[in-house]
Length: 290
Image (cartoon, rainbow, N blue to C red; front, side, top):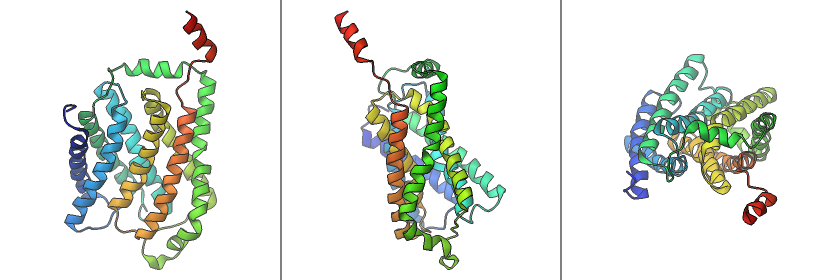
């Protein structure tokens, strides 16, 4: 498939995504009903965007097909489905029962697995394949276990202040949509204590799902940042906003800008904390003299 141009591969992924999304909308209770033509068009546009993101990421994962599938699936499932389901259970009245939550989770598992399989098949690594275990050990070998534990905790907890800061900025604009039941949007505002717990949980889920990706992604620190930011924004927010026409455009636009800011700042934090270490200047001088 590598012999085909990049845009052709993205289009191929978009076609697969469109089929998957139409199936998802048939069985999901989280979206409204759309005109068929609009549904297909919005799904295809979403597929193009996600294809560009997962394609960019997949080409930087020099792993076997099975390992790449697992790494991409973990990231997509949590960012695209599970984290949003958890938030939806507290910020909407739609995810109102355990059965709905479990059903949405199961659908998310299947859809994200199929998306990951499509990405693995269509977008090949640009460098020779490496052993997954060896890549993990090599990445984590440059710090002590205690240091990594601190980094994981800091990276997970850091999500809440980022989320809360930008949420507070847009809250005067979006709160009327949540507090007025007559809007018919099925939105809700949880208590502050619940909000803190939910977003801390989402932070730990994001980090846990992304650790295999961060440890095996063979790219510059800048490319790692771009990959993370685009995954957070496109998979976690933009695609749900595009395909869900039940929310007002203005509300989606404001939340879109909010989540874009969240994605950029939080991706920068993760990219910094899990950055690729550079040799010290002393070591470089020694190697140069040798």
